[in-house]
Amino acid sequence: MTSIDTVEWPAPGDIIIDVRHPDEVEKKPLHWPTHRVIVVPFFKLTEQIDTLNKHQSYLLYCEQGIMSRLQADAMCKKGFCNIAIFAPPSNPA
Image (tube, rainbow, N blue to C red; front, side, top):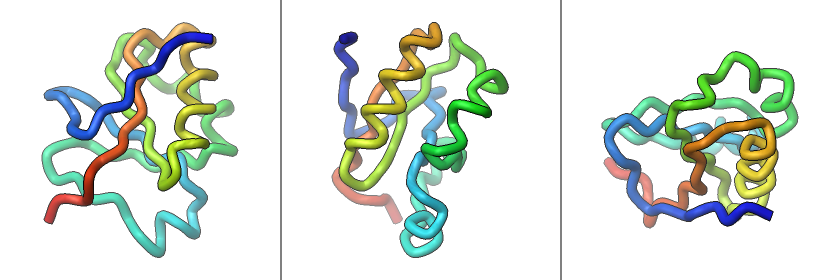
């Protein structure tokens, strides 16, 4: 199994992928003003993975970190090079 880093703050150019269920996203949207956040529910990531750039840096986010870790591992196996788990201390205002 590949070691996938966990980060609290995105680096310049990172794209955050929110893999939570749409209900969770609606109740508590992830706002990160300095970075692009795309919402791709965990159950749709596999079918949308071909639309993503394998060389782009992505941070996967979910509340508990479990689903984001599973999806990050799946992306690594599909050849994505720059994947990490996003575990912010809190959403910035």
